[in-house]
Picture 1: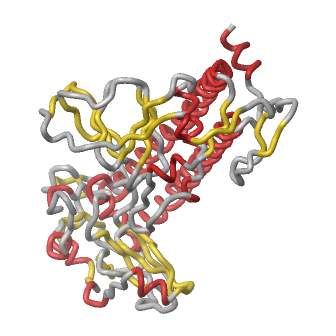
Picture 2: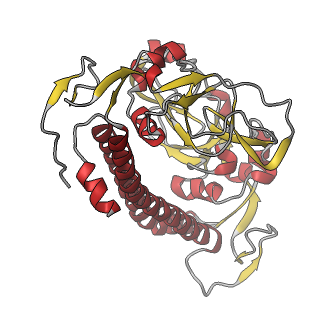
Picture 3: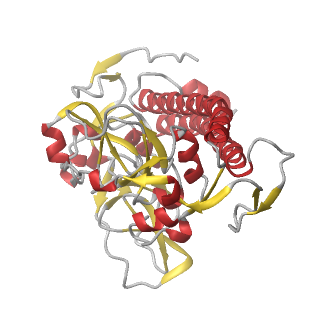
Length: 406
């Protein structure tokens, strides 16, 4: 859908803003809102159903008291600085998050959408922990229409972003369904086999249940050799000096590219540590091929045969939480992994048949997942572009907002 432009424009004098409608006012952020620091909340009682406590990463607690009780735009001071938060209920912020007291001639939701359009990478300090100062924010220029026009723009963006968010949610649900289906297909193939008529026996592993009678149950170390002793970690600084085209693997896949390799054979890698061992957002067992380097955050396994996808999926389908240690930094030790029981067909031919069965099915679902992820990226880009265009006056949505309201 194309949108009309305003009749006349003027230069803002700000590179990232460009031209703005002629009748809009250009003013410093300090005239739109005052910026205030958050503070420690620990002197108050933590209370379920209390007032939200927010940091730059979002809400993380509820307490019995609040700091401010009017609509506000919250801006990251340290950490996540590029994710403004709009809040209308009473709240408390800690020192990683600024809160704003918005002036009477500024519509709160309009200011929020303007803040969403700010290219924060132009202003942030620090690479390890990005940060912003009050001075940085106050120095920003806010293109400001009359209050009634701000209200129309905010109403238009509320409506349009809600539509886009609904489409994004649909794609996210599709990804979850594909993930569940993929897991079910693989789990059945690598624990039950391909022949539904084969006699079954108890596996002795509660979550697996019965398995084909002729399959073997045993620890991973019976079927795989560990190459953990050959791992070499490199610091980010070392890797920066050795840029190249060789993949450098960590706990959940490729994390960098360097100029040398340790391995030149296809092997199975299994995550050794990290939250992903519990939340399983990405695979914890995967196949590395060709030339590559592995750090000390992934176990390295050489299975009995070359059906590496089969072996990786045998481990991938297992709930590892009972053998993962540590809460702050979950860890799967080499000993725990080597003693982990898995169920496998006794012959290489049968393992190859299972692998051949699951490859096209998973490839199809992975492609559908990739398409859904791409759709989400496009929708997010459209959302960002629409907000930016509306709050900087590149499009005139006054009539559209009024028509919808009528």
